[in-house]
Image (cartoon, rainbow, N blue to C red; front, side):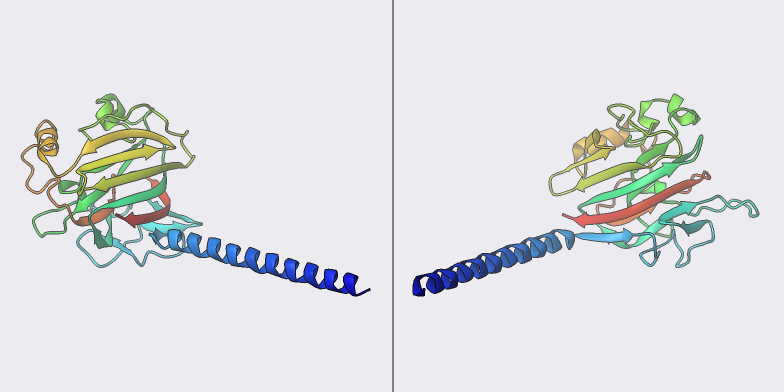
Length: 245
């Protein structure tokens, strides 16, 4: 009988030890996930625009509204045209930015980085390089050259291919800008679309061959704001988050 009691006690101790080890491992995994998640800052999660404002103002007009889990821009119909580019309150230098976008039929928009709100600039695109958002089928810009199509570094680097989803569906875009390594890239729906130099002679040469040649301040701000473009077409964004490098 003693053998059975001792055996049972050992078995219980072994099970308790295994359970404790399992819980410790699970806790470690949870902690690791939390650490990874903490690398990302949520810029928009469908509930608040606290981290955004319109270009050169502290306000956000009714042109930008939260609808469900999305941030939707709708051009105002009852006002003389005024630019409503949206920019982050915070500035960023080296980062990975990920977001989902959905463009309206024949629509056009974009995502900027390195945006300056200096008094001499009137819109985000005057300083911020743009990753194009476009209806490649119906917007005229798509016919102006591949450097104007969705996923392009606008007017400078063409996308590898057209992987955009049909109008009405969400596209996932990841933009990486790393000034320390002098390189950037764009991935759209899991496909790398473009890679490009930043903040070096190669960048300057690329700008010199584009429509931005001679623009005061364009692509010069290594630290600046992230911007969402008002191009007078309906566009929606969601799941916007950023990881600083």
